[in-house]
Structure formats: structure tokens, C-alpha cells
Image 1 (cartoon, rainbow, N blue to C red):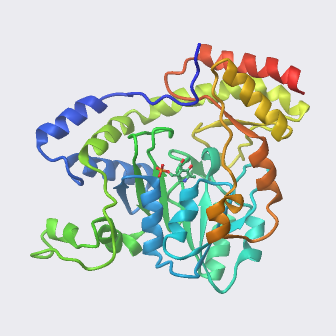
Image 2 (cartoon, rainbow, N blue to C red; image 1 turned 90 degrees about the vertical axis):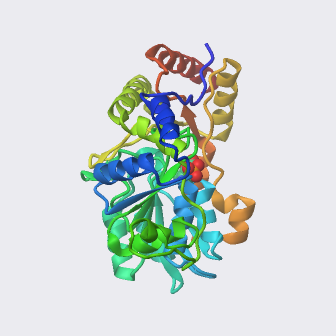
Image 3 (cartoon, rainbow, N blue to C red; image 1 turned 180 degrees about the vertical axis):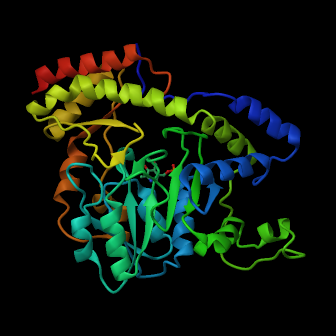
Length: 378
Ligand SMILES: Cc1ncc(COP(=O)(O)O)c(C=O)c1O
């Protein structure tokens, strides 16, 4: 039984919607299905506006433009994240400033943020690792005190909550990913969420090549023209149609994932006493079962576990080469201090397979093989 780490699948009416989009005769962006997705996401998260993008990366790049991040401006963020969190800042000439993470949730350590702030700091970019929302109350308070914007990189956190508030609705703006490895998928895809009206008008312009074409479509100007910098950040209708099919099935998708996540958690719980780290969910966070990870004692045991599982065709990848150690991270960013937790976690973490349609038998096989190898390795 080959068990991939992830396997994208159809959840409902994706194909029907794609066919319908073609029959409607509009394949470019911002047609019927994009509008449906915008309204759906706005309702689901309670934000002022949601705009589809072709990736989370694109939404993060839009956030940097919206905040006018320029040469030398600093944005505080974890190093334990995907490149896009940082490259969106570096693309504007800004400096990603890497701060360590908490050992329990692997999210930005809010107690270290204040020390990383300089006169050049403009924003804090938080990542909700594995769908567990970062400590947004404390982070928001620091941001208000220092007049900084807060960007949520919510690539992992679709459907997660923090004190009952939807991930993506708490910071000034947020980015979702609908990449095929995420909970809700569209192949490649993403969305920029705007908590209030502040950035709405400019976001529409930046997303549409720097033009006021959206105003033209609404009849608010009689011709559209180039008014700001921007790019083509919107997806075509086929992506939006696929995505809408997924959104309609969100509860089924999330419930199925949660079933597998909980099965892993119950079965592996006992290994904590043997020094294996497992996800911690704070009581005020509702997570979305985005991923299940294990923290092995060290890099050697982690690599050995990955190798052994792979020989049995079970794919359990590591996660994140910390950005402060990456060539571009060193060139464009800097670490605010020693990043000891990040360094250790990145050496120890492996992710277990988890995807809709996986089935309990496959989960049980992973659990059984993991346990058996662990006895040998430890
Ligand atoms: C934390 C984080 N941010 C951003 C991204 C980029 O997402 P996308 O592939 O949709 O651009 C990823 C991708 O895995 C991610 O994990």
C-alpha cells in the first residue's frame, strides 16, 4: 500500500462548475465563479472583502505593495515558514527580520517581538503553523503600540479559529492558499482578505495590473486606465469554478481530515513520554487538521524515520529549511536574535500523510509502521 503525503481529490461539483464556467463563455478572471467565491469567503470569515489570487504568494506580494513596504523597511516574521512570507517583503526591497518560534505551537513567539522592533519596522507577518492560530491578541497589542500593520499568512489555517474568530479575519490583511497541498484546493490558488475598508480600493487596483478596471466594470468611471503599480494577481474562472466546488464541501472535507488527525493523535499520544513531540492545541484555538506532525528527538532519528517509512512507500516529509539559514534568507533578511527553537524544530519535525480519501486503514498503517520503527530507532 503506497501512501503519499498528500493526494488532491474532487470533493463535489468541481467538474460541473468548470463545465458551467466554459458554457458561460467567460474564462478570464472575476466572472460568475470568482464572485461566488468572494462572497462565500467574506461570509465564512466575516471580513470586509476577499479577493481571489492565483496563489498565497501573490496575496502576500499584494500585502507588501498595499503597505508600501520599500527599501530598508523591516517586517518581523518567523524563520520557520515557507519562502513566500519573506520573498514578498524582499521583492519590495524590504528586510525580513526573523524571530524565533514558540516550542509548543511552532508559531511566532510573541514575547520576542518587542525586542526585534526598530525604527524601520513596518509590519508583523504571522504564520499560523499547521492551522493553529498564533497569539493574535498579544501580537495585535504590540502592533497597536508601535503602529505596525499585522499580516496573517494563513496559508495553513483555512477554517481555523482563535477565541472564536476566523483565521484570516484578525490581522489588517491575510493570505489564504488553495494550493493542492492545503485543506481547500484549486491546484494553485489563494486569496487576499481585508479586515476592513482601509485597503479595499487600492487592493482592487493592484490586483488588476494597476488599473481602475473594477471601477469601470461597476460603471463608476467611463474608461479605465493605469493608476498605480500592480500586477496580474487574479486567477482565471476555471480555477474559481474548481475552488467553489471545494468550498461547498468544506464541512465534509474538514471533518474527514479531523477524523484522521484525531486518529493519529490518540494512537501516538503515548510516545510523548518517550520524547516524541506532537501538536499542542491551545484551548482558545480551534484548528483545521491541516497537518499532523511528530518531533523526533534529533535530526538523525528524524532522517532515519523518513528513510524507513519511504522504503515502505509511506511519504512523511520534513518541514522548512529555516529561512535565516537559506542563501536568500541570509542575503535579504536577518535574524533578530539566536533562533534556537527554530533550528531545533526544523531538524526534528516530520509530517505524516493526511488527505481526504486517505481512509482509516492507511492512517492505521502509518501509525503501526511509525511505532514499529520508533522502537528500533530510539
Ligand atoms: C506558510 C506558507 N505561506 C505561503 C505559502 C505559499 O502558498 P502558495 O503555494 O499558495 O503560494 C505556503 C505554501 O505552502 C506556506 O506554507
